[in-house]
Length: 429
Image (cartoon, rainbow, N blue to C red; front, side):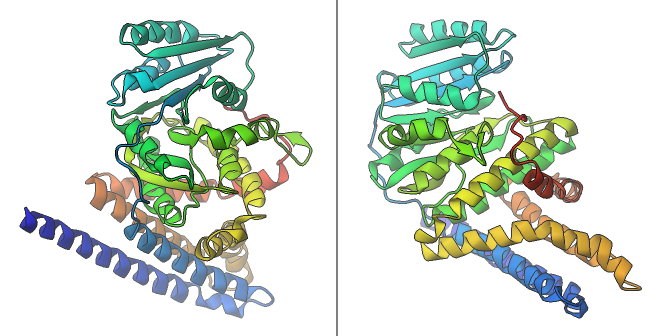
């Protein structure tokens, strides 16, 4: 047994070393490839600083994720749990989403499920009622709320919290499916009173549909295993997604109404309900991520739907990042530095892209955008290599290429989100 553990440890150490080495190569490469930026009058130093900062930032994410360890918890802690599932036009998935909790290894007498039909015009309500009967037959309380008119997902989540009778709220999207031990792994961390919210690890359910879903599978995996894990070290996971996250109800209740009626620039916020709720909690409490609490979710399988989703997410990211910037400096110093560094990198990216791909080649004879595009590709391949080593997926390279293509195609979304911040018509429910 000891020999097996030692072998596994050696494998992990070799992988960490390889990751470190590859990242350093990328850092050196990107600095060399962009070293000509200092010749550009006025703002060349910004581009050079950007290339160095992004290399260091990515390196730090991998290193922090490698050293990520769970916070202290009581493995025997079993609080009562309320699962909240808002849905609109999810007749195809909603029954299975609810049914997953019937198979949970968590005590049935300590769990309730609250499903909200948010003005669906398909068979969502009928499927909820069918799941309700199945749950009652197994001794699980399933409450179904039927709204004739669509009110929006934020309203549905708020209604679920108001009706919840239990200590921990678990939010799950209507097209997400949790594993049987997901709840147990989510709630055990709430034995620590500092914890306000816990994000589970969500994989892509329909990852084998086409190249777009395969690419999203890579993005989801790396997002949770690297970036959320790195943030979790300091208790400042900035985004606990609605597909599978848990909150302490006692910490939600005081901010629920303010969150439900949130406004930004004079407009009611309908987008980014989960990112916004995370912000409300991490002002005072810790937010962590656990890779043990697993779920799967359905992602867009066509470009138009994916583009609209990404535009919604980009708008909410901009809004909530501005809000978080007001208090993040009060959190852990390393977490704060990381946050503001990423803030600079994200807003500088479209500027750098424009100058490296369009302006720079036109302004300086003989220059091409290939160095920048290749540097971006190397960065994303680094994520793909990690994805391959962890999941053994053989499509990691094509997924990395697709990741690169979609990143280039959608680089305009951040500037557009800034210009259209007051437009909240892109709703998910």
